[in-house]
Image (cartoon, rainbow, N blue to C red):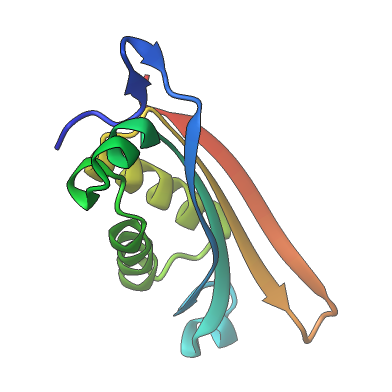
Length: 128
């Protein structure tokens, strides 16, 4: 896969985003959390070169957000992490590795309706 994130020798300022990606998974540190699925909501921004894709109007030259969304789901569902911090880190690294990204921002939101609040973590990572 070609490197995504640089345009004519310059860092790309374009961003491909995924919003409101809901993933039902086992997440949490308490015993009761390990026995049921809970929803996590992801917002992800990825550095991308959209100029090439738009000039050819071809998915082959684009960062395939549908594929990236499936990657996020797979990492989180298979991971069954205890912490949302771990989920964020694993998703960021997998996206960087699989899509050759220079930079990614991952937000993970965990609604906790029984307690009346929502927990969230946001991380930014780069391949350098």
